[in-house]
Image (cartoon, rainbow over all chains, first blue to last red; front, side, top):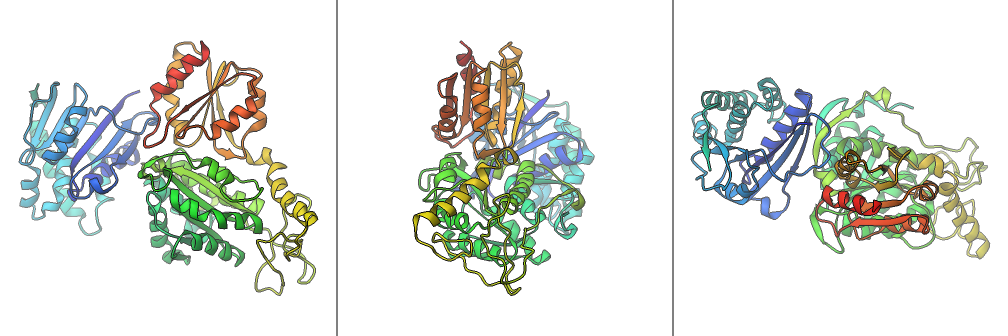
Length: 187
Length: 385
């Protein structure tokens, strides 16, 4: 039974929940895996650090919460600091290079940084930074097939923004392909 | 009859448990929803309010939960399938009129997305501590039917099942989900409409003037009378006779309340739905419902790999309680363990039915998160010592 716990963290408004939703949807609807998404609710999630958790498995997910993520996507420094101590020993940390300053994790984590916000700005809409991040995540982790992620993006973003978002996804994915296998190890 | 294809979103979706409840209700033919928003149930009302205009349903955001419960009772008598949703404090507010629904024998479905209590408690975190309130929350003697889904998929399916039970037994039916299931997003497969079997309301086949709303019937469930078709009748929360008119004496009370009890008690074998696993050789049986029935599974699997003979009963229906089954098993096994997110509510029923025949254990906590499977594993180990 292969199970992967993923945490996505950032601040409210960055599209953290949508990012988690697309990962879960890609895994469970478009790539024949099981995926359970849970998210933080409440006032603490509005504007300040928020997080979404996805558990992906080849069998039914029985315990729905993430306890020690094998993959963490950090889109803000606050979110990163709040959750970095939960990372599993061999965690893959995917982070927004301009927004997160890496610190000592006390564990071996493979880290992959991307200036997702700048790439999104170059595409004309900063709001798609989460989708740039998603593409990047797809390439560096290889957890979910590219096509599955693309289909999930296409069917989850607002009508009329599909092209922009798919473009953002591809930019992130390609950036990731160049970096894949070249992770820096942070201890 | 089959579901109306225009109401069924056939296909594979990635939905949270609350949206799945809404889709279940819509697929079941619900055409009237009255509610008052409360976390963590609001997404049900939200989705219904978005979908109803497309399928000709009526959605009303009421002034409060008392009015919401009353509105779904009234609309049900008006001839449509109705539902509402709420949580914690809202469930408390609905209790008086839930009892009215029981007394009037009114089909409808109420979803309670349980959060941590008492009072406003934990609006954004799960609990299962409304289970005794579901059973006894309104005053007087009565029986209830309550279902507990463990996933968005099951939320969809059990809301449909709840509608069918409510029509079959002519009574409000409770779906007792929780914040974890309600806010958890998973794949939900909605089948084609022709694969969704619905029970329609049973109306009298007698002519106006010859039928009354509580006429005795063979199975104890009276057919309803349609409104606007010439039938004259009265409904009241007061103790009433077969015509629905108040009769304030002990004989009428016995007749009236007895039928409320009997229609559930005489059909428990039809209503109770248990999913049993590895019970044949079990020395320990873990009972759980809703999300708890799911998180106990890794613990049971681990104990099994260590040679402990442990089985599981997942209670899809919590009320009526599976009294007969628990009594049977208590004669055979060493211990039974109830796992629930409260300090022992349904446990009390299990313990009563075990009646000292085997060990009886509770794995409970005050809510706020689901059980740690290790706690369940430890309880299993402890129980076989």
